[in-house]
Image 1 (spheres, rainbow, N blue to C red):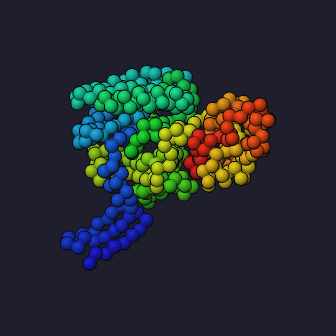
Image 2: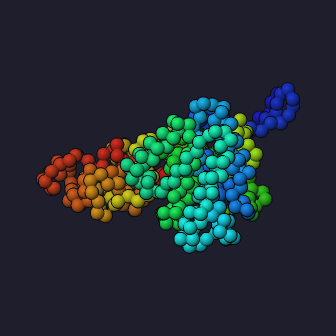
Length: 407
Ligand code: GLU
């Protein structure tokens, strides 16, 4: 007889032959599926993993490269991308700074000093496997502009097809906002969407998501599986990052939410544990896994959903909100109440409901001034009102993505 018992953290049962009590973590099956299907993995390495009190932790970088080389050796069809933090922390150490710089120029200077050393460390670590690495530095602007977004994707795809390992970081040195607001958790989610990764492994200095801050509460329990990043899950996060990196658990959860919206599983795992990446692929139940229910966006919609700065704002009436969200319809002039901002044809705009809540983002078929003229009117009147008619819709449904649950 086997005794089965479910609790919050998994399935407990007694093995019939050995009589031993065995625990399968919640999400065991989901994990097995994710890892067995994975052909393209993005591994995000936090500053707390690759740097230590003496600057770059070359031993850790070597250990990670050993695991990545083995992973690629196991399957010829496995693409690996790395998003590596550590430029600022490494630069700080090289300049003899003991505290993280406070001003933006100091952070940028530290990143400029540290990025070269960071790449050199990764390059040296992969050299022994004759594995070429490529430095890819991106800014959020690169991903906001559709042409640059596609260029970045082509470059990454070319590198992967040549068997080269992209080592990606934010281009901290040139973009103020990147350091001020950006973090590599967010960047990793965006890159995962860009390249259509099958999995993101976010390696950090803690074991995963706990139901309480484990630094303060000894009784905090690790949550093995999350399928939706809702208020309850967000409440588990400590907002404060550690001393060396930019993101904290909250930024990891926001990244997880993005990944789930793309239909990409993400796992938060302890980066310093020996062979953590290989053990995960071997089925060991480490960390917290975020598993999407279904693939939500693809192609252009992934890009649209992540535009950091839409060019304007359109307020919709209730009918339009229902048509867009529930029926997957296009936005017609009759559903527009108000237009804000000056923008041209093809501009990305935020669509909000009458209470100011974001409904989605779309590319417009008309200029802001034209939309102002046709708002609240029937599509048959467009030509009469602005002198021509490009289309019946202000935003076609193929160019619209619902984000109300994801931002
Ligand atoms: N890009 C920063 C660096 O390399 C780190 C950002 C982060 O910690 O998320 O130092």
